[in-house]
Length: 109
Image (cartoon, rainbow, N blue to C red; front, top):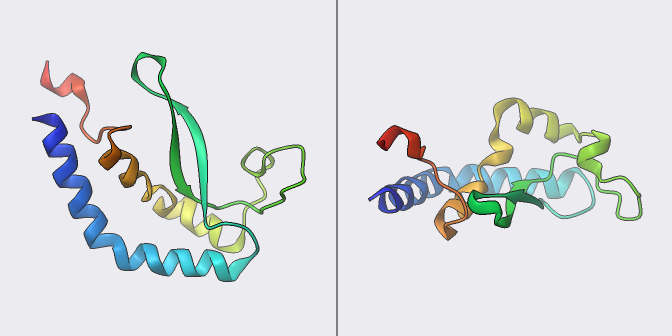
């Protein structure tokens, strides 16, 4: 039941926010070089590792030894995306894939 609810909510939110996601994607592509999305590794239930998808909010420096998200060099659009939490909207794809859940399991005990 929880998985079905996750799918329904995530698909609905993704459909509603799709125009916003396209605008943000275009803004990130226009703002600088590098990909519009980043994949960050997370650890899920049972220690299972998965990659979460987020909008890139930091300066892309491929040869830099320190990852950009660690160096905290945000782009012009990146600070707005972080403030409004729009940078996490692509995580809905991870919810649809089953890597994450929107509903907390402790609510159902």
